[in-house]
Image (cartoon, rainbow, N blue to C red):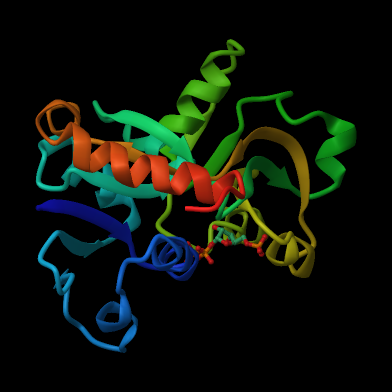
Length: 212
Ligand code: PRP
């Protein structure tokens, strides 16, 4: 049996669309429910529904053989696992954002405060440029940082840009593009090689538009 950790939330529907195209029956998971573990009828695959930031944790420990999570989560968690495939869904960008006036004054002209859900990415990003910043970890609605004066800027993901625009904020710097990745436990890749390879090959063909 292969266990797949799926991220609940904004990535869930697109991920399920992709797996259904591979022929997996996800009708049980699609039903509104609080259930967290699902088995396919053939008993070949078990899905566990986890918080996005926990996907790499389950995969590193081998509780899940495969995980699907955003590159942002993988960068932030920095877990030991193999990143096997860019699924090209859940595309967005990690950016530094703030009030437009900061474009003129420069982002880093004094010791600034950065609010973010991604403290590790933020530390790495600014320290790689030799810039020291105060990082304030938030768990959501990070845009409130500059709006309330809690922080000078934010480092966050932008998808449509609507949240920034509706709150009078702009992108100041692009950090990196983000999309969903398929990751695999390092031991599982050896012990369950054929099963995992079949799933990855199927997804790769789908993404390349080849018939399965
Ligand atoms: C994310 C992100 C931004 C918003 C960007 O938050 O942190 O706030 O989406 O999307 P947009 O560019 O399409 O407006 P999410 O909706 O995941 O909720 P959260 O703030 O509670 O984490």
